[in-house]
Image 1: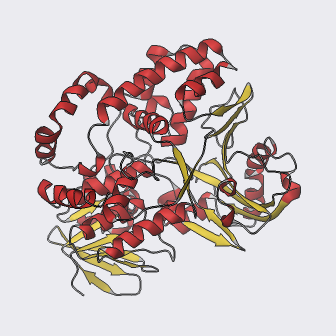
Image 2 (image 1 turned 30 degrees about the vertical axis):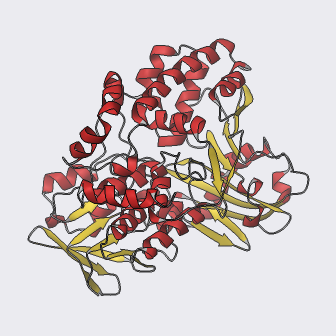
Image 3 (image 1 turned 45 degrees about the vertical axis):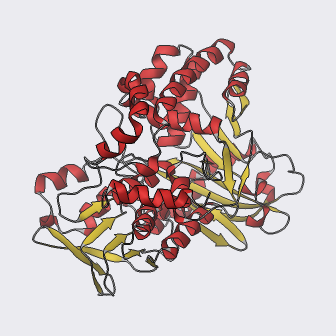
Amino acid sequence: MTLDVIIVGSGIGGLTAGSLLARYGYNVLICESHGIPGGAAHSFTRKGFAFDSGPSFYAGIGSHTASLNPLQQILTVLGESLETVPYDPLGEFHFPEGTFRAYQENERYCQEIARITPQGAKEYQAFVAQMLGLYESLNGIPPIELRADWKLLQVLFPKYFPALLQALPKLPQLGASVGDIRNKTVQDPWVKRLIDLECFLLSGLKADGTIAPEVAFMLGERARVGVEYPVGGSGAIVNGLVRGLKRWGGKLRLNAHVEKILVSNNQAQGVRLRNGETLQAPIVISNASIWDTYGQLLQPEDLPSSYRKASLKTPAVDSFMHLHLGIRAEGLEHLNGHHVVVHDSNQDIAAPGNTCMISIPTVWDASLAPAGQHLIHAYTLEPYSGWQRDDTYQEKKQAKVASLYQALEKIIPDVRDRVTLELIGSPLTHAHYLRRYQGTYGPAIPAGEGLFPGYKTPISRLYRVGDSTLPGIGVPAVAASGILCANSFVSPQQTQKILAETLKKY
């Protein structure tokens, strides 16, 4: 089999890069170590329950032409679509100071904040106005057309010159942190904490560490095109990308663990699988993390020593404790599907166990669980260090999910009595099943202290995508990383050609 591109890993970044390159006519093979595609976004089943392993909050994945979500734009180009369930409110925030519902429309969202702090609500509204101004300056340029080389200028200036002029006044904010913008409009300490929480949920970092365009995009898309849950869970998104990959001639091999990326004369040559099989291709793209790519998949001598050392020292976002539950659903007809619980106002929101995220997707899609059951995915930050599979492992897991149960009891007081299935995942579980360094979700690179690396590496014909490359962490960001990489292999005219072909269908 003659291959043009081998991609290591079938996370969202690998699938978007691979499917888009297949759409361009490249002969693509994606090698996935796991028996399930999707990386951190994969779904898995146990006893009739279909659980999301990671993200469960999506905006703009059900509308074909209106959405600026890079993931939706990829699906549209591939000729794929998703069945989704829109919902509002988006969820509930549970603080010691009170509970409020988070609504799609920013005005109504602020009215809910005003129940806790009227002055803070006004300040939050001013903050949102600043962020939406930044969003409006960016939304004239579709992410599907972006690329990560100098030919970006050939895309932007002929076609999007008016949009660029509109963006010029906002140029200083493009590299700013959310904290920089927040601190100019917000004095209320509780609202500052709320914005920290919103950033943390999106990027794994608080406001001072999160880049402003990432939150601007989230606020803008949330209000403009809304939030939906994909019928079938996050696995439905992965399946849509896999269908698109195969529709255009690409291939996916599961249980194909890449042991090494082969390099000769500073050029990528292909990969060697754990079973000893060698696959050759002139282009290799790694969807593995920066630590796994440079620390495991390559030999130390393949990279400049100083570059390798600096890359491997990149700080990582902590891992998580995961609690997957099946529970009896009777009497729970009016649940919201998303909840965030902050236990202690005196603790940092990023302290392990203090902020708990809860998703109950059977509120929208009952087919994910057996009849009469709800499924729950709850998770909270947890460092990887100190975990080992010894005699105390099971006891430690139970102790660490206590905060998740306490959070759930704020929503379903008798949740423990309702449990029919319990699965507990530790950072070791996360690292094992996702084949990820320390079970992390990506680099902890604060805004203003450095940029996420681009798609290129010091090795010719070896490239990277995923949450340790630009634009960073989160499903839209990793989908964008795949677009930036794939588009850079073709001319802007080839990109315009497939977009024109796509538009004819809608």
